[in-house]
Length: 194
Length: 129
Image (cartoon, rainbow over all chains, first blue to last red; front, top):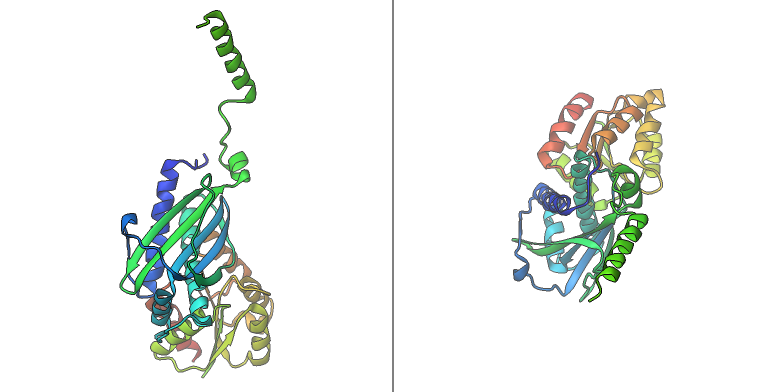
């Protein structure tokens, strides 16, 4: 039986997302805590890392880290001190993104949902913000740590192959059914005009 | 004392792994490769002195699975201890790696703790010197 991308699935995915960050950061000696969205402040100077996801879901994982926090994180990873973003910081942030995506992949495979992850990409800039098509599904989580805050987005849609084949999800109303239903309604209205 | 080859396209990850090796008390010389092609080149030039290869899976040019598969096909190198260190942690991928190289000495999934990596490499290094 396939897995439906419904509210229950999305709630599970949110837990997987949280677990993936928690596991990855803990292995680096960093403790993160989920923040209430109302406590969130927009970041200004940031490192953004994104990695593509395909397979059961199509989309991407994006992590936004203030540059100062990124320096702290990678500094901890390497036992060094950094005061500005350089290649090591970007490489370290990409690696963390890759690890988080790897945990998501592993956790989802345990639920029968196979994913492939792409190559992580990093960007730096001032005043960058994530925007998604409101029609698309995405999860947005914010975290705090002793080294600063970060936020994570997982944007996704069902892959067509999943919908058509793996999940066995088919529309319960065909166009023929819809037409018949419409005709029935029209017939009733014409028999009982207002 | 045998050398340790660390293969990963992330320089930060290579540095982290080397730090863990040092913190575990091993003073073996370390070599670094940023992809599979470079790893093959280093192994080809230095195979008699390399005692352990720590290899990522997803890398540009030549992946880790291609590296371990290639080593398995060459009798003198088939016994070279190789530990995969990768985000590819699904059972299917672990089995794929073992199929590519039946002598695979270990499999460490990222993210890993320093203790986890030490637990895998310590007995290997104790044996190869």
